[in-house]
Length: 406
Image 1: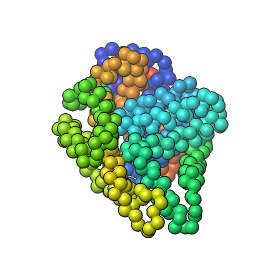
Image 2: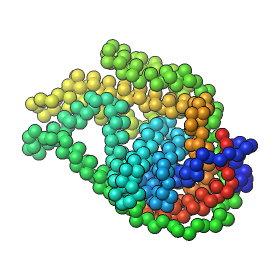
Image 3: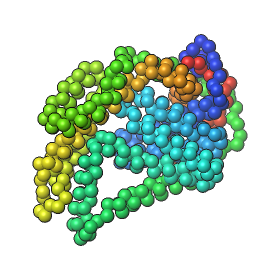
Image 4: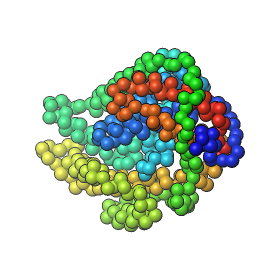
């Protein structure tokens, strides 16, 4: 398929985006998504901890370098939005968390650059804020998943460990400050690395672009799933409803209600429960329940204190996590409803939709030009430099062939 046909396949007519910055955002956001796909898959397969934090560092390096290449007002948050929207098409059933994380990182970097300027202070501060948001996002995700009860368990574990080393009245804020220091250092490194990447000055010839590119026809279109706005609303209400039900009626009633609800959900969304097939998730639930039973009591004078109240709290946290994961997974499917897309398009989202469509069209080319995940992690500067070089070429081709109309 020719390039022109591939890019314009979504519609028989073409229209211009409101601003050229959306075209650049399509390129930057698409390349950011490419990095997320390649590095994210590698980190996931290797079971490397803090994968989200490493992806945050990579994203900040890439966006700082891109903004130096194209110092456009609003480029960063638009690129973050494009990357987040591309993340929503991920085959994973749980995509709301990563989408929010990506968009938050982009917004913080954009805010820093606007307030402090396109200089070292603005970029480095933005890098620190963007990377540090990963730990805030992680804490928020844990609180949503398990509730505030888990915080008390963590604090009791910390106090217990500190007492074993002879530390009386340990201050948990010191541990949090040390963790924040690690993320600040990572953010500083991301900012410095993003500033050190050489920005290409010469425009490449567009004939270096591949002869064909795959079309991303209707990336948010129908996927064979029967969408329902009513079910979308019910899924949004299900999380607080089940939390209140479990708290008011007890664990036994909550367990029965969640089991019936999950059975009904499984009849419509078979892919939702893929994550529950992973032994690591159930091991996590088991560890949280056991730790809640062992460390629920604050003033335990024995080596091991098993609390029935703590055990029930652990069960409640597990039920809450199952409800949140299931509901968010179902919501992640229902928000792809073409009716939702049509509504957003009419409410000022047409530009982002067309831009993300362009990014999807060029995604196979972007990924084919990327080095392997190990090379990206070992030599991020060189990888980002290559991405900037490809970006100039890709931008010229997308501008030449017009913008697809939704």
